[in-house]
Length: 288
Image (cartoon, rainbow, N blue to C red):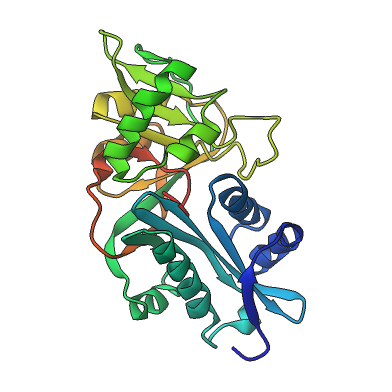
């Protein structure tokens, strides 16, 4: 688009990006923080559309082994319908291809879906957002305990099996205070939960506490136990998970959650060997 340069984001852009995302109705400072985390902690990429010093759009990309994710694609309303969203997505796709990913995934709104289809993305399913205004009080289920450093190897194995990707860099970055595991009677780790704000003193507090975080389990029993374990009575919360995980959806609805929105998962490239029924909660609609 004439008069606009798409370039990598720099540190000084992120504060301004919060306002841009707010105007674009895509999370405000929360999304800006996610892009900063992706670029600074996960070796990912963030791009901005710069119109003479004004930031009018953005996109981001992160590679988890052979699987790449694109998110944070936003354009200010007055700059839409000129191909800028397509160009911001395309530069993220090229970055991921250069990083060696064979498959690229993203979550599409109704407005963005035609743009992504023209770039070769196809529908691969749906993710649901379930929300409650006040969580019920529940007893911490048996077999759920605080995560320990020694659990991390088992957590990485469970996550790779569920997602079909290598999110070890991400999980190592956030594993710590507030993490939970579910184990069977023999002590075998069967699932884990990672809150989105596990390190209160850290620099990258990119999401509010009402977003519980990622929950992955090898079976429905462990997944449901973890969903119940992090409940905080009286607090509002929102969880995103694949529509294919019927057990997770049912457990959340039993706790008072209701489906509020849905997004289309789109993919370019071969389908990963993932098991969506093991994903009981995603980090977000950027990197799953």
